[in-house]
Length: 168
Image (cartoon, rainbow, N blue to C red):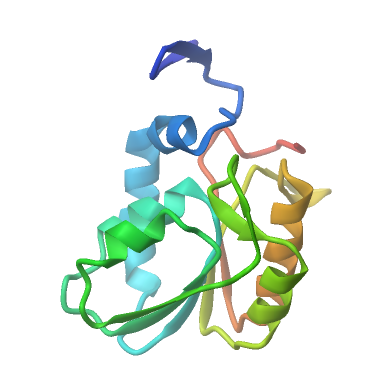
């Protein structure tokens, strides 16, 4: 239980893999459990913010095929997944593409996020601490999270056991 298998080798379970591809397969079972639990908060006709977290992809993979939603995201990896959902309006926020997070970042991304009001924001996390709150490894990703947070009616922070009591 000390290591997790990833493409090209293994990593310590306590470390946050850097590439989107590695993070997507890291703790896959836990992400699937979170994704299934998240489904109860999604209702027809909602507007959702979804940031660049890998758990977001798991949530989208479990959506009912016929659900009607508007998803506003900085997460470029959602594009191929959501092609199979004819009733989901996908709004990809503009900005600079950040390879490590596979998402858009920067002032354009933040400004566009602030121009919407979301019913619910699914926030990916790098760390969750009772004293310091939610953290992100990449500064630009944190700025997008703050912009989405400011324009969301409700927020669900997504975290597995490795993210708790962590300040990245």
